Image (cartoon, rainbow, N blue to C red; front, side):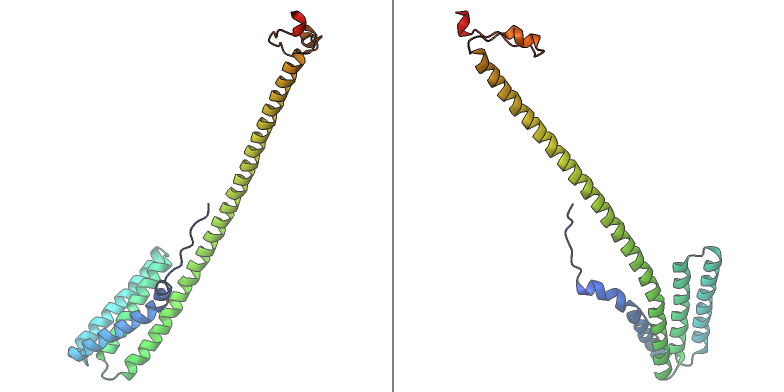
Amino acid sequence: MNEPIVARHWLAIAAPKAAPAIATTTVLALARIWNANGAEHSVGNAVLMGALSLGAAAAGVAAGNSTGDSLLVGTAFAASGALAFAGVAGYADGLSLPLLLWSLATAGAYGLAARYWRHDRRETVAYERQTSERREEYAHVERVETLRATTQIEVARTGAAFAEQLAQALVIRSTLPGFDPMALETAGLPELPSVDSPTQH
């Protein structure tokens, strides 16, 4: 019934919180590498990234209209934003605009992630509450069954002790002078085995 408490490592707790910043920083770094390798002022590369960004945004709109799955829509729009950000960061010749876009993209990513984190937290709290309620219910049933079994054992033990004492009393009574088994049967007691008493000798 008692489950072991497992403490999560601090990296396992911090990793999801750092994921949006890591993602946007990775996109920025790759875009600047792409910039250094010929994407700066390349109209063809900018058009390609713009088309990919618009395609991802259109996929997000289509997914929202057809399925209504918020996770799929959010992923499509996040991909669209990442592609647009990568295109601008790869096309621009300085770092000021890419860094500005990086800060905006990071803030937006944390805004989207916070929504999902709240949803997951609510589901986790609800699950823990239901689990706790079930555990308490089962613990109550277990306590009641334990009390019932203990009571039955005590009743059986008391009955056995009473039967033993009654048997001893009957055996002792049968050895006394004037004992009449027929009188006991007439009184409604069960038939007793015949015991030779001293009066019968």
